[in-house]
Every structure is written in structure tokens, then in C-alpha cells.
Image 1 (tube, rainbow, N blue to C red):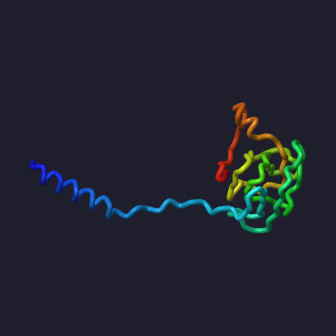
Image 2: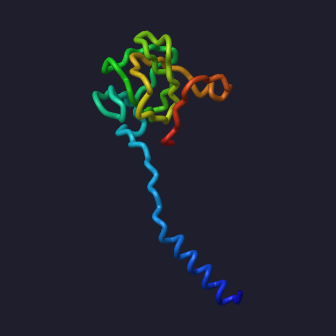
Image 3: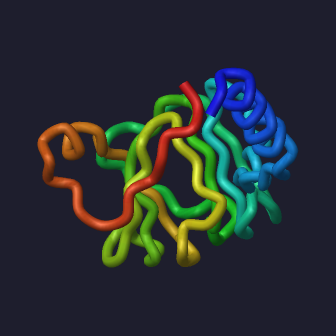
Length: 136
């Protein structure tokens, strides 16, 4: 095959690849929560009644959900801890790392306990479902 013919084949194949439609990757909805703030919502998808706070809660403190239930959250204020299915910070829980969000906890949470989750992550002792960091 000649050099000209090889270059022509490469050009045609390259042009064909450029015309293949690219599929869009769905991204989760961004939580409407300001930087340096922690936010809770009563429904999945960062909807429903909401509450915000900026000051970190004391380690080990247990707080009832401000709207009676939490289904989604965004923690951009450095807070870490666990959401619980119960109203007294016992039983099934979900770990919450600082600077993370979740559009759906997977259950209705009724309480939150402040704790150093990253300490357990760094030590390799955190079990269960973890959240993913989305913002610096």
C-alpha cells in the first residue's frame, strides 16, 4: 500500500471517529448548599424541608433531625459523623465525611451523631456504606 493511500485511510477513519455521537454521562444534581455550610433535606435529591448550620457540633453529641427526618445532605462545613435511622443515635447508620454529599441516604434518618469518621477511615475500621467527597 502506498504512503498516500495509507494517509488517506487514516484520514477517513479519523473523520469517521469524530462523527460518532458521544453519549452524555449523567451527573448527580449538585446540592444547593453554600460553602462552609452543612445542609439537610427531608427528601431525596436535596428537596423538601431544609436546615443549615455552620458551627461544628461537639464530638459525640447526638441531635435529632431538624425537620423530623433527613433523606439527603451536603456537608461543606467540615462536619463529620453518622446519620441514624433511630431518633437516639443508635442502630443502623451511614457515615458522613467532611466535604461530602448524598442525594439519598438510602433510609430516613432521624438523628445525627458528630464523630471523627475520617479517623476511622484512615485507620481502616469504617464499615458500611461510605459517602463520596464532591467538593474541596
